[in-house]
Length: 324
Image 1: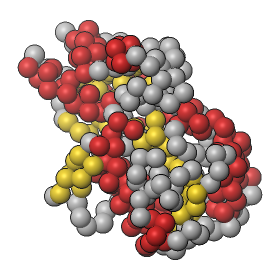
Image 2: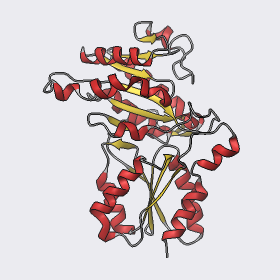
Image 3: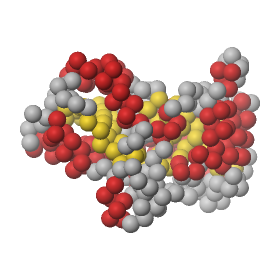
Image 4: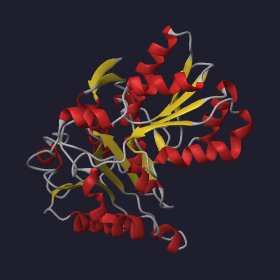
């Protein structure tokens, strides 16, 4: 199996789906001539033309609304919002229109829309370009949310998202774009709503997604040196949630650590913790532990940024606190 980067995997997913289905098109800032701010669509304009690779003004609310309308008419837009920090500008077309129109039309209208957006810290981009806002979108019924952490998952999930008839928010961690991993040359799909057990274990369950899954696996290696076998679950899809995989693991290990990069207050893992306590309390031999970003605005300083976000050592320490 070849090794390609996370960014290349996303590029391949879009390219393959545009060849497969002429109703798929790309729209966003700098998508054509520039080939996107991270270079993921270079050459697409020349290959597919300006009707399928559309450069837009700096107007996220406007071009997202256009994409919702196009999806209503049977096209399959892939919208790129340059940073997840800018998605609040587009909340009306995303959460009041795309998320609700299938329901409010009694199923007469589908919204096969994908919104790709880079999130997360690590590039020293400061407060307005470093946030993890995926929890915001998990709050709204009607939206599906994916957050792949490896090139393999990024390609398979994005291809499934493009073929899905409901709106899907694809959160891509910008630090991962250069990370390499194994991706098969033949076509494959990963179904939305299916988690992946990245590492089996019996002593504690570590649940994470996106970049933090790599940190969780690093922590698991260090825990093994202490005689602790950690099971690492990559959620991959935040909505719909693969609850079956979570509960099967916790019923086996009886301990759980939940990891997210976003700020701890009202974070996505707080919802997972609540579900675990509601439904699996009797299986727990220790309190549910959360590892998350501090409740502060992302700083520009590299030292400060590294301090406020979780790392493998933080996950290791959290596990040691609940394992006898």
